[in-house]
Image (cartoon, rainbow, N blue to C red):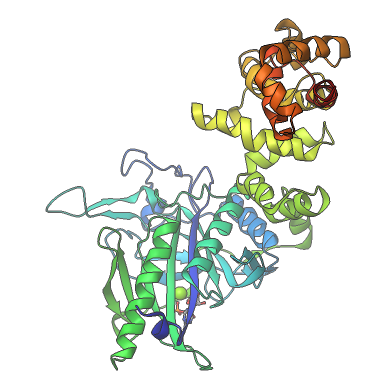
Length: 485
Ligand code: ADP
Ligand code: MG
């Protein structure tokens, strides 16, 4: 699409995110909450809603909802009741979902996102409420029939509804990445979009810039990755603008994203939408959340990615880039926190984790939680370099690989065993320097004739001859002196 046409329009997006909670059992029964079990094996009469059965609230779901609410700065409702959302569908054996309609547990609050220009933007939250998942209809396993797996029915969900504050597909991408990071830090959802434990419906509209009214919103479903949410939104923006430019009228509808074709297709119009006939759930008592309970949860909150990011850039002086990598995954941030409790060389600690540690994890496909070295060893290695005992390159190339196999040995011991302790002893270094000058007469003459940039070459030769053991700082000065005489 021509940018002159596209630039006439403003994009407005609001996202509805469903996060499956990482509880052991389901929201209102003892059925196991587990992805990948034998189909229809975690299904009791409560999940099926048989007459005479009663739901019983899983307390963990309340704790998880409050955690997310506190992390986003929401108001937590003191008094709530549950509601039935009624509709007929083969994967909904009860004929209704238990949800929160009029009294969501959390209202207000924000998700902070970083824009491409580095600025921070707040995306408002309308609400976060608890509900139960429906079962799963599987259309692509059998050629003729749709299969139903009810293991998912009754799994607790948090639905996070944003205000229509998002203005581009890129912002939507960043918003979802932040939400996923947050639920993972809080350990309330595994954030796996491929397995459907985090799902997103995107509401998209466009309007001529300056128009105070929002355009007609279209809801798009069935994206199984954050990247696909972005793609689906991009497709919709172009489709909607093209339609409007052609003089067409848009109607509210729900569309489904097809990742293979990168298109959206109409599923149902607003007129055909279900009337859910919400009414209060008679089988569950109203839920009362008091200040004491909220404060207990507040005290147990882990450090959050944004707070750590701010600490790393402002207090520790790290770059945006470094802070971004260190806080991307909770495990990485926690490991970094452990290392900086043992060294004050924050930058070196960041470099080791972002560099050698991450390379090791990538190479061997290991999670940071299973990294074989304790933080102490990294701190000791940093100290060894800072004391001038080994050079950074020797530490990285010779000592670190041995440490990975011998976590029981200190880096100092390894350096001694391998005879890698650096020589800052002048006599020893001078010996190496004379050796280098003897081996490179032509370069020596050129240097003495004014080609000072050859110092790099000489230092390289010196490191070779000394097998990396000459302290570069001391050696550089001595090398220049000797060459210049
Ligand atoms: P519905 O009742 O159809 O579910 P809601 O008012 O609950 O609609 O909004 C659902 C989502 O759609 C929210 O995330 C909201 O921010 C977003 N939204 C509402 N109006 C628009 C619009 N005109 N354009 C884009 N998103 C919108
Ligand atoms: Mg809605």
